[in-house]
Image (cartoon, rainbow, N blue to C red):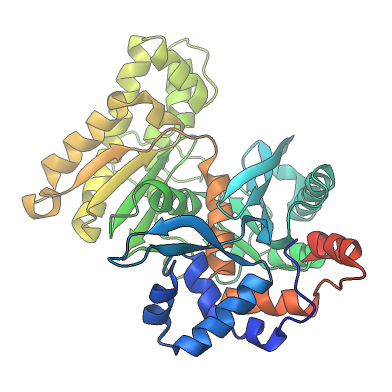
Amino acid sequence: MPTRDSAGDNAALTNASDIFSLIATGAAVSRSALLERSGLSRVTVTQRLNALIAADLVEEAAKTLPSGGRPTRVLAVNRRVGHVLVANIGEAHLHLALMSPEPAVIAQSTLRYEVAEGPAATLDRIADGFRRLLSDTDGGDGMLLGIGLSLPAPVDYKRGRVVGPSIMRGWDDVDIIGPMVGHFGVPVYVDNDVNLMTLYEYRRHFHLADDMLFIKVGTGIGAGFIADGKIFRGAHGASGDIGHIQFDSDDPPLCRCGKLGCVEARAAGWAIARDLRAHGFKADNARDVIALVEEQVPEAIMMLRKAGRVIGEVMADVVSILNPGLIVVGGTLARGGDFLLSGIRELVYQRCLPLATRELNIVLAPPQADIALFGAGQLVVDNVFSPAGAANLLNRMVSTAVRPDRPERARRRMGRAG
């Protein structure tokens, strides 16, 4: 836990949230950049920066930046400032992790899970799992900064609640944030898994793109959209729900949402597995589909190509409306590579006007396990280190400041409840 010097200036520290946010988000990583970006006087910047350094929240790294004159030392948030707790609620598992602010995994666990358990029991299980992670790591470094939850359902982000029909039966309009705040007393953020995958991919691999569309093709199908560097969620969290766009046909397949002819019912992992079973193959989910593709089973390859064309058909409409500069395809079925991607590209370039596709790139996401979990960590960090979040964090730290005569007791308190 970063500790305060007993002679430190609490007022200067609580007023330093703007400086702290600029450093934490990478918007200003030198003293001169802080002067330029903050618009504050040199004396004020120096006073507030010194308070952050005295509190061990910010450090001047040995690395330097070229500046045309004397080398400029890089300012960075102390990695020991704190940690975050995140959970990805899947359809059959709960994946929990304790993460550093990068975000990077410190410790993690996976629990079997069924949606039928209901929201109250599930949130209690997550809270218990978080406590075990904290116990196993002796509370982690620093204080608990916040909690992030990823859900496989539409989420009203402002209220932190599942909205509308989804596979998470019984979760509609249930308060998720309240119980978790009750357990840990820290900020809690909840979002749809595809939005979080989109956020992480954008921040880690494609941050140079102003506008990006991410498509998750796995057990289900969904999309997330980055507009001017920010997640676009829509009015109530339903943005990007392309899996339930319907196509007319003579014999539309039944979707698990109860409607006929949805994109998911034609191209999702569960739908391809259904069709492979009809041909005599053992396939229960998207992973089984990819296993058959990797074994070069012709029927599996053919169905994955067909799925790509179905997704490409709906993406052509999305491209015509949103005009993204980049489409990133991820999820379990993306491991099928060009077998999936070629169909998407074919329909998008065939159906869209040249103006919309002239500089459009359609690529596969870099392979990485459970990016929704990392996205949940990124969501917490983004909020905690935002100007408003940084002010709240510094106020929390001052109100629970470590006293020199009881540092260990205070450290355990802050690590447990923030």
